[in-house]
Image (cartoon, rainbow, N blue to C red; front, side, top):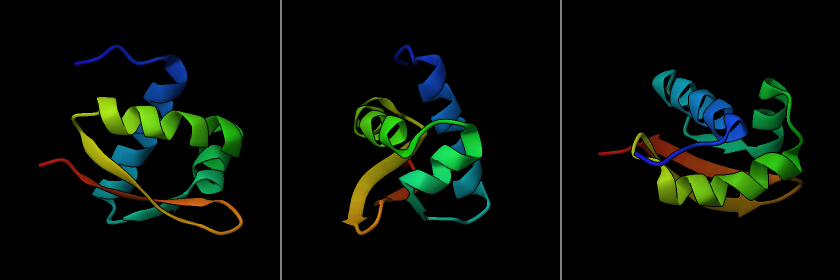
Length: 75
């Protein structure tokens, strides 16, 4: 398992919780608002988390007012 920064840990915890509740499509802004970061901070970390995470699969899905990410359980 890779080392995660504090911000990455917060994002990953939020994503894991969201997937557990059945959410699959999340916007950077929604994630940022929930964990106290900016949408830019979240958006810049998600591609790195997509490569590092063994818990969830993260895929850039669409871009409108803010980027939408498709998040699914890994496996």
